[in-house]
Length: 173
Image 1 (cartoon, rainbow, N blue to C red):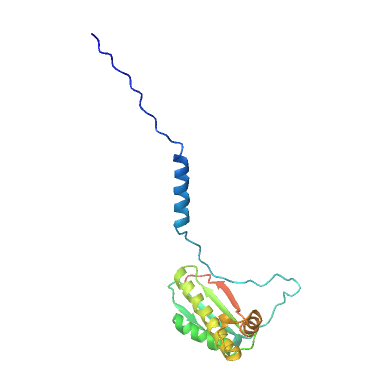
Image 2: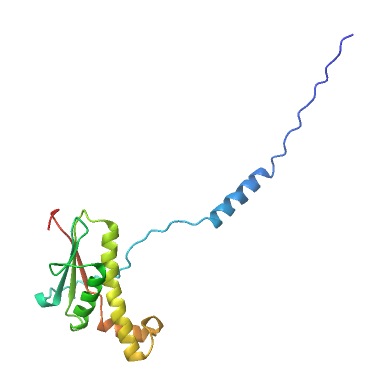
């Protein structure tokens, strides 16, 4: 007698909800993971007004030269300084000038590191922030961050950020 083998069907997997589960896992990981954001410098550029584009003659005494060389050495008016010294020099320079009669001329070598460049920029911005905070506390009795828009406008009119940026042409200063 021949034994007949029974042909068994393999049960199929029910995959109807697999797409739903995959989509839910994808959404879960997108929501819970952090995305890297680009970092940069927040600068407000002046509006382009062709009628007002006039060339001003600025006295050399109203220009603070800040230079960063290829070796990440920081110079302020030709003298080597650290970032904290730069902040103090910018603060005293801007405080001693009239409202719109100062310029901070920043020049960086193409070979300088991003970290050194951002440290320099942070020192300059910190000097302005410190000056604005001191004036707000003196004039309004509270920090600059707590000022109303009108108060902020008045403080920023006294200490406007006037930064001119350039790039060194050569490798060595």
